[in-house]
Image (cartoon, rainbow, N blue to C red; front, side):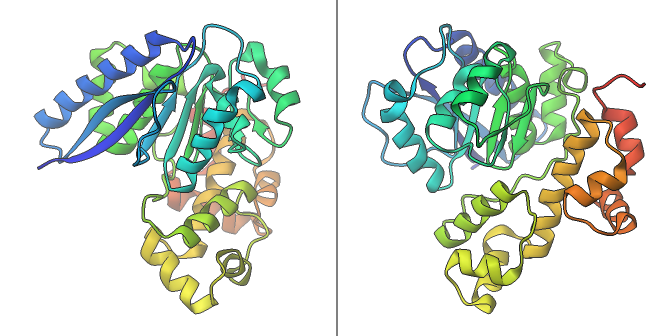
Length: 311
């Protein structure tokens, strides 16, 4: 039997149904290509209505569509926000389109995290969620277990990223080709971003993963991580690798390189400064690690994926 990835779309008042139906169609097309290519994985796309009772089992992925009216205010959003917090605490990957990011913010899930939303609501977002790290120029921000897409039609970018994550780059490329969507041109991102394992069921390790993501992997140590988990260091090391598939140092490296990628794409900051800002005192060591993890030098990566025009 193929492995099934459950992705739920949240239906809430005045949400954009075009993205709901469009994502359902996109995932169905991706499943056809996955079967044709002999993939052992499929996406099962469902819906959860905010008017109904919350499901007992949280979905693996929850997508919050955009809205055709202004974003929800805190009081209106709170019942949904509480459920989002509970799902995220159990390992659900959260995703939003357009002003759906406001629901994630009201749930407290964007504190210390990178995110994007529709350009029209940038000021409102920053005023409402000052602890979030808004990247308004990005079409899509993938911050580990939280993905946010900017505009109302950016559901196509989000859908392709999720297909890449769960069904692989070949299925993603075939789906994009069938839909006449150019993923490289629209997304301007490299598709090998770090996708941490979050559904392992170890609550202490998941808590550390959230903590590391919020800190960007900076100024962390094994004792500090073990303390955050409430475990003795040797026990923490064993459980972290078993849960995530990575040693803590490797995991932190992936987080830091992810931050460096974004800086290379969206700023003109010198590579040495970026290395320092993401936690590397030795620029040469950073450059070696960057090339090992991405397959490109930092300069080549910037040349290929930078969104700013050359000066």
